[in-house]
Image 1 (cartoon, one colour):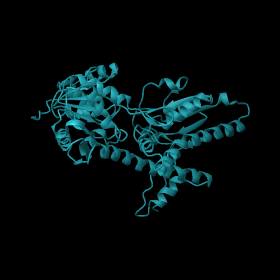
Image 2 (spheres, rainbow, N blue to C red):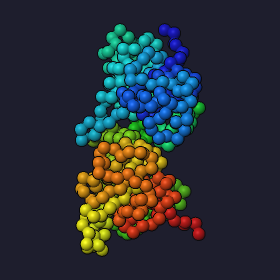
Image 3 (cartoon, one colour):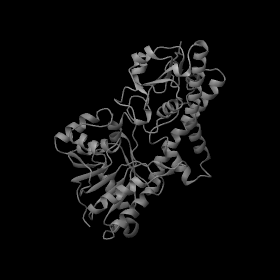
Image 4 (cartoon, one colour):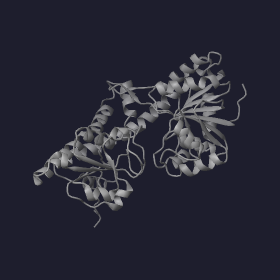
Length: 428
């Protein structure tokens, strides 16, 4: 079967990974059809605008839409290659992976598949998800042969190639980071490599199969999660011992083989806060360290809430004419990391939601990267740094946005979970 050139690529899911990926292919003068169930996102992209915050993305999208290389729709169309970049959340409270978005995407593209097409799952997924996707495609299109049955002679090529980029640097790292490619057959891997080589300048590393590629991504983020948990646990210990954890980490990191990460109010984002649970769900009895790290990081928001309650009590003791309902809290940052607008799995967001439910007085949120608050924060006000400094009794720093670092000054009743006021010069 002759291999077709990639004249048209379809990206399913136009979120924080799908849209930058679509824009990157389109910038190489390839026709890209982006597909998303969100009509607002589709309309925004077709105007040459973006619905997410990512440096340089707006500029690229504007150019490729104007030049006719990128357009968005809600219904899949024929293409030579399909990249699926949809969410993989949990279902229920036991962190069981939810593959329904992947299944829906697979069944949506199935009617337009043709012999010679390549289907790549980019969504971070539990081990076995790519094979499950291939099974759904086989059910929907029995007239086409797939790798699990026809091997190298299959009509459709299937591979897993997880994204490995850092929010805030996506447009750069899509090009310069190595890609791990796990095809269901060598021919699938070869075809996927040819696709990514159209813009990736780093290596495309071939894994033994999709399961190895899936596990590699989960392992990368679990490694980071374990290291963050170590820093977060140190922060708990230092708090009990009345020590500055950021000073401690600076001192320890002067050892040439030590590089401790920075603690915070928890861990967020759709990768580090989620991926380790995929490993735990696959091997619950063996993944003991990975589970413990998740529990440490998931438990940090409650520690922060205890600090807020203690600050409220201290403030009320000094201001006996007030009640808890009279106290105004300023919450600095809602995103899961500095200088982005992504609220997915954000520990800061969870903390504010809990404070709102507990009716801890008036709550002011300062998040410079968004224009409106999510519906879950009804009753919370979105304000500027200056207004928060003027109105609030207690100041809680949850994200180290650059706007806070340039404007921040130590304030009475200030709870600093990200080291805003702990920069020390230890070189003198």
